[in-house]
Structure formats: C-alpha cells, structure tokens
Image 1 (cartoon, one colour):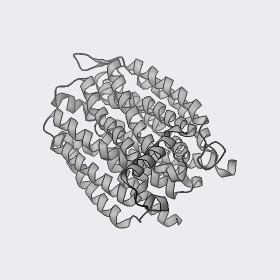
Image 2 (cartoon, one colour; image 1 turned 30 degrees about the horizontal axis):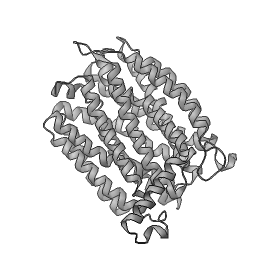
Image 3 (cartoon, rainbow, N blue to C red; image 1 turned 45 degrees about the vertical axis):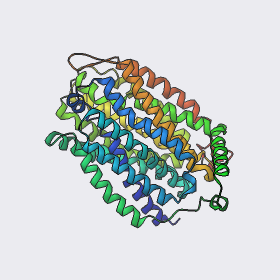
Image 4 (cartoon, one colour; image 1 turned 60 degrees about the vertical axis):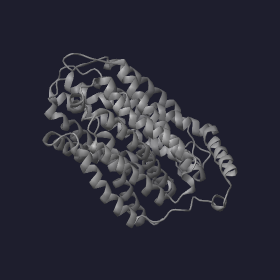
Length: 417
C-alpha cells in the first residue's frame, strides 16, 4: 500500500476508533451522575461498566470463527453499524436495567469493531511502521479525553446523561458514511480455499480446527497472557478513578473534566512519540521502560487522600500517559505475533480476552472496595497492589513474544535481527 493511501486509511480507522473508544470511556466520568440517577453503589456501577466488556468478549470468540472469511471493509461496516445502534439504545434507556441491556448490545458489536481496526493495521502497515500506526490509532483515546469527554460531561450537566450518547450515535453515523465511501475493499487475506462452498459439517470442522490452532500456538498464548495482565493493571483502576478522586481526594465534580483534558492532551502527543520510539528502538525495550515507569503513578493514584487540584491533575495525568503509553508498543508486539493468514481470528480471540479481562478487573476492583455514606471509596490501595503485580508480570511475558513472521522476538524489527 502506498504511503499516502496508508495514511488515509489510518486516519479513517482512527475516526472509527475514536467513536468506539469515546462510547466506552464516557461511562467512567459519568459514574457520579449515573450512581445518583439510579441510586446504585460502586459495585453496581462496576457491573454496568463490565457488562460491555463481557459482551465484547463473548462475541469476540464467536467472531474468531468467521471473521477471516469476509472482506475487512464489509465486516467493519456491519460491526460499526450494530455498535451505533447499541449506542442509540443507550441514549434512549430510561432505567438502569435497560441501560445495562443496551451496553451489552453495544459491546457485542464494539468489540468486533476494535478487533477489525487493529487487524486492518496488521494487514496493511509494514512492521517497520506498525508502531507509529498503532500510536496514531491509540491517540484516539487522547482525542476522546481532550475533546469528547469534556464536551460529553458538559452536555450531561446541561441536559442529562442521555445527551452524550445521542451525540455519539449521530457523529458515528457520519463517520460510517465517510468510511463506506473512502475505504478500499480488503480481500487479500481470503485464500481460494476459503471461497469454496462447504457443507455445514465441513465448515464447522474447518473452523474448529482453525480456532484450535489459534489457541494452541504457544506464542499466541503468551500474547493472550500479556493482554490479560495489561487489562487487569489498567481497568482495575480506571472505571472507579472518577468516583475516587471526587469522593476521596476531594476534587470538585465540576473540575472532573480537567482530569481527562490534561491527561488526554498529553497522551495525544506521547502516544505517537512512543510509537515512533518503538519503531526505532524496538517494541519490547520501549515497552519495558514505559511499563516500569507506570509503577510509580499506579502506586500514587490509588493512595490519593484529600489533595489540591494541581496534585490530583499531575498524578492522574502521569497515570494516563504511562498506562496508555505502554499499550502502544504492547499492541504492536501482540499484533505482530500472529501469522497474517490467522491474524483476524487471533485478534478476535485477543479482543475477547482483552474485554473479558477488563470486565473481570472492574468486578474485582468493585469487590475489593466499599462505599461510605459520604460517597468515599475504601480499599483502593488493594486495587493498586493488584495492578502493580500484573504490571510486573507483563514485563516478563512481553519479552517472550515472537513475531509471527520472524524467528526473532517480536520486540525487534527486521533490522534488529
């Protein structure tokens, strides 16, 4: 693929990812409002957050059986359309139960969207530029934090918590149209044998064999374990960060958007910088530095007591920069670990594990904590210990991942071998 068309494709994928990410992350800062609106505690809110991720995990496994049989463009358009319908259902939800159902529906398609975005990056971007491309895609989190979350919170304060989801559904529809017009067809991954008509029994035997081969490969297993550790280290903390800094650190709720504005503004630049460094110096060395450095803000942010706004913002910004930053080389490592012919199925399984792990992390955090009568959270330091342990384990696992097309570790580019 020519560099100009590659950049256009990456921009389109980043726009899709922005919508998907914002739909997911907007739930976290809306936590205080949703907990008041539905009269629920931290445990019930963690169920609301994790429902999306568990749904994504289940349908990610289902997608692993079929995703490599379809044109990437058609598959992504279908999944993105289902995701937007789910987002609209969230906007229309009148109660906790209906919102829970809508989040499950949105998660079923949202996880597939995430899988296809990174699968397409792996299919189209050479490994020597994959770190930078991954950083650009993941910078959508930063844009969501800088632009989307503050605007969403403002809309929620002026109208209601329903408003951000209406805006997301409308904006996502415009993105869907642009993507359908600009994105080229992608069928190179489909082999001739995949196009032959199969009877039902042959089809299931073939797909089960393919699925087993994806799960049974040792390199894939190490990549899946790394994904699990990283998601536990991040999503045991992130869903309850907003209620914690408001209830425990004393941050006025009106200043809550500042956390995402400052953190997102910094990660917008650092994600792409980290991606470039990963391409230049190797994925694993950059991951090692970022993951090791992230231990400091993880320790600090889970022990914040009443603090000045400036201290809270510095701590949470450092947390966002390093925790999200380590995902850039890690995702480049994980994406590169699969054989191209199996990459769609591999990424579907990895996405399922990613969402299952984040859901379990959220539930685990909720189980470790209690809510006081004044709205404070007790036990966040225990969550911090969990995140620290998972981060240390990820350092070991990432070193053992190898490229799907090279015999050397995936953390090294061809020039390093």
